[in-house]
Length: 118
Image 1 (cartoon, rainbow, N blue to C red):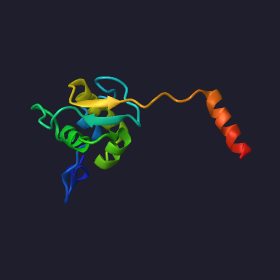
Image 2: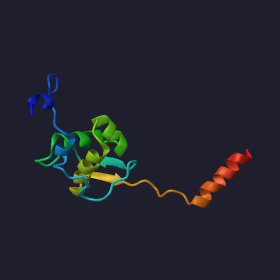
Image 3: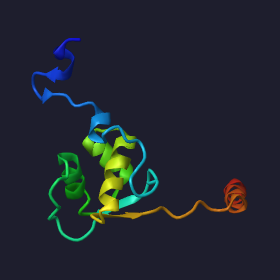
Image 4: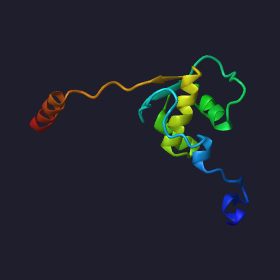
């Protein structure tokens, strides 16, 4: 296999996304919803040993940011970002605010009926 496939002349070596998570597909702490809000906990003085992607996530999440927005800004697959945020959450470096539960089906049907009545 040629090394040309893993090299971009402008950016340098290209790292496959699965290497960023060391092949892991499940977050270290808990399942994180796509619309969960992530915010950096405490200051921006991270412990040693974090990867550059972890540091970028911490910098981007100084203000509450949805997980999908973090993935879009990093241009990484959502599964990879879930694992990286899970690492930070397990180390208590970020807080994860879960979205409220979906409303009851009955309530949604009543809303639809009310909208149709308009």
